[in-house]
Each structure stands twice: as C-alpha cells, then as structure tokens.
Length: 374
Image (cartoon, rainbow, N blue to C red; front, side):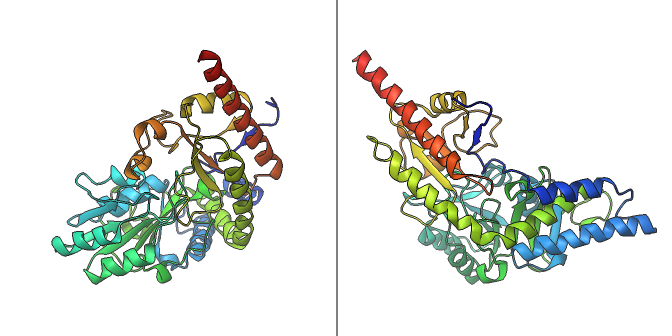
C-alpha cells in the first residue's frame, strides 16, 4: 500500500489541472474589472474572455461567436435542451443524466450490446413523428468510452428536419472533434474534463440557433446566458482547450495502456470489458469483477491508494446500478460488479502497473474467500 503516492484512475470524473491553466487562472485573479464595463479595466478583462472564446472554438472547429460560456457541462446541456422549447427531444438510452433529466418527456432511442445508438430506430422515430425535433446523442460515453457514429446521426436528423445536439464532454481532447464535419448544430464542453478548472463549460452553436435562455438578467453571452462571466474559469478553460488541442496526438498513447489493462485483467475468470466491440476513446475501460460488487472493489482499491469509480461520478457519490449498462442489455447482477477505469494526461506507466497489481490482488482475495467459504 502506498497512500503517500495515490494512483488516480478516475479522469473521466475530473482530470488534473494543467500547470499552464493554473498560471492563467492566477493571472486572471490579479485583474480587476467586469467584462461588461466600458472603461480600460473592463476592456482588458473582456479581451481575456474573447481570447478564451477563440481558443475553445478552435478545439472543436467552431466559430468564436458560437461559444456560450456556462457554469459547466450540465448547464450547457440544459440550455441546449430546455432552450429548444417547442421541439420534441429525442435522445439515446445511454446519455448522461444531465441530458436525460433536462427533458421531461424525452423519447429514448435504444442502443446495441456495445452501447452504440440504433440508427434504424432513430430513423423510424423521425419518420413516424414529423414534428420538429432536437436529437441529442453524446460523442463518447462517460462510463464505457464508446464513440457514437455522430456524423451518421446528424445526416439522419437533418434529412428529417431535426437539429442535432452532441454532448462532447468526454470526447474533447481525446479524439479530434470538428463540428462541421460531424454535422453538429449544438455541442457541449466542460473545462475540467480537459485539464481546466471546475465550474465552467460551454454550449457551442454552429449558427444562429434560437435559444430561450434559462438564466435571465443581463445581456451577457449575446443574451443567451445572463450573469457576470467567470473570468478565472474562462481564462483557464481557454488555455486548457489550447493545450488539449496541441497535445491531442499524445492522448493516443493511453490506448496501449488500456489494452494492457484489459488483456491482464480479462485473463481472470469471468472478467468482462463492456463496449469492447465498438470504437472507444483511448483512456477508458469499464470492466467487471465477477462476484465482487463495484462498491467492494472501490473500497478495497481505495485502501490500496487507487482511485476508480463505478459509472458516472455525477450521482451524489452513490454507487447505483448503471443505466448505461442496463441499456446495453447487461443483467443487473453483472452490472453491479462493473467499475470504470479512466486515465488522463498525467497518468504514468507506474500508475497502470499499480492498478493492475491492486486489481489482481483484490480479485485473488475475493476468490480465496469464496473457496474458503465453500
């Protein structure tokens, strides 16, 4: 056990803040001024906000004018969905809770056993229901890392006059994201998933989509989101976006470590990787340990100085059955033994080694206990 040097393998929950981001946040905190003020101090702050807007836009091939800064990915998802009042909301069964709960009567499109959205079911929905719709499908799943065929989703949606919203929170900085190439009308980002500060995100618009603001007051963010801008957060977000874009190719190295984790652990009887038959982001694996609940694994690994999670980290710290795995047809008993392991820009090979050894140790102790009980 090495509690003085913990191993963090929960980067999909939040990743380490990059050093350049810390510097940018500190510099912003030294400034006094409101971005809405017309004096020199206000204009200096405004420039920092607009520079960040350009950096965030560049990460996803968007127009700076299309960036709407928000308090995080959840708010951005809510703005996209609740701000599209009057439209039917059509979502995949494996969306993040911030999408599923933003729409009171969302129409759910099923996924296959790997968690990939059923395009035939989506088309059938769009044909049967002719009303204007907003289709919301994430780019990469937060639990399994499975990448959705967003270009095909967009082509179908546009064929039937629907708009497309894409939660790209878990994809940005891990795979190339180009809104135009993917045909996305609205896209969600979160700073703390790419090495930026917590509490800031963005809804990115491809054009001049009409949105009903959910936070009203002043005319900030072109009237789309009222409230004084979070200057330090936005400045850090901009730098994180620039760093993520420039280091995108570095992220691919994690796929080698993910493959090693999966190869080592699936040698043990019954261990299973979920979503393995679909394209996935390089850093994420969701796997089971037969006979050992996710909560038991997390506690044992935590005592060994290893941080992992079960499902989404946005569920009030509770370990609950994964709706993502349920949508993939995984039975409740097996789903209860699944943990998520996610690496990030600061992960080292030593971290991977320690996780593998700790998981094997937990599995061995559980197996020995079962044999003794028998």
